[in-house]
Amino acid sequence: MGPVTRRRPTLAALALAGAVFALGACGSDSGSVTGAAPAPPTAIATPERTLDVTEVEPSATSASDVESTATAVPTDDEPSADDTAAPAPTALEPTSSAAPGSGTARALLATLAVKGRAAQTGYEREEYGQAWADVDRNGCDTRNDILRRDLRSLVFKPGTRDCVVASGLLEPEPYTGARIDFLRGETTSTAVQIDHVVALADSWVSGALGWDERKRIAFGNDPLNLLAVDGPANSQKGAGDAATWLPRSSYRCTYIARQIAVKAKYELWVKPAERDAMSRILDTCPGEKAPSYGPVELPPPGLGSAAPAAPVETPKPAAGTDPRFPYCTDAKKAGYGPYVEGEDPEYGWYRDADSDGIVCE
Picture 1 (cartoon, helix red, strand yellow):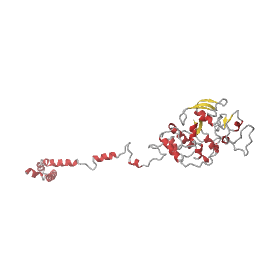
Picture 2 (spheres, helix red, strand yellow):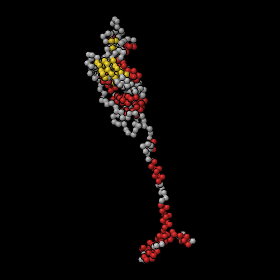
Picture 3 (tube, one colour):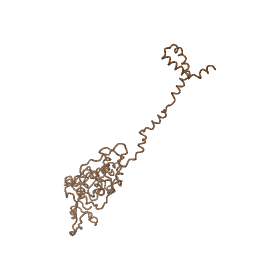
Picture 4 (cartoon, one colour):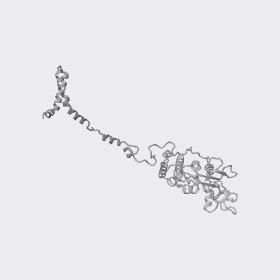
């Protein structure tokens, strides 16, 4: 029982011994302190172990706290709280964090005005001049210029100075991907048609209503806006925009990029549904480049203008000929035509827009 009694005052003894030791170090009687020094080591053994246990107790920032902080850092696979709270991108915003690159169709689309469809009141094909004019004055009308550009294995009509395309190969046809053997003729020419990528009627309701005649003629004959395409596909498209008609999937990015370039060049607007459709297509090809283009080149005044209005009284037809009309469209509505060069006198009354020797076809 004696040893137990000595251990209870251990802490007090330690404090007293420490004070005596400190006073002895400063005092003049160092001998008495030296004699008392051997006692403290035995008394300190137990407190030191107690202090060791206290030092290893977890601090306020424990290992579990550190791990919790690490998992809060966003990773590539998990959006941060800020990203989650951010509003969803609009149709014109890229889905990636990178801004659309300069020169891309997406960047150009972002510059176009977005408005509703204007009224189609007053629209007529003749508002854009002749069906195909020679606006570049190279001696060849626009239809044949585009056929020469887009077809291969060309054969020209004799005597036309390599202007009028008699036959050629369109492969691949852009809208369907098919191979089309073009042969000029009354029943075969329509197999390949020249499409306005941005339809004339669509341009009318997107800003062209306010243009003068020269700008509309330039638009109707601009190679940037023209493609040789499959006739039935062109008829199916009609005046549709990107929200109502699209070509085969593998050509859609190219097609949309060209539409955007045309609208940018002529400062036409896009309609909301059209803009959204374009943006969805470009989501699949964000790096698609827009075709380059220069300023609008206006034709000289009067060049390419539509035929003058019909006289008040239609002259009586010569014996054996059909009635004469202001336009082929009027003749066809009345059930007349077609007329063949060298066979029908009526051929000379109308303009052979595609120079195929047949009018009102």
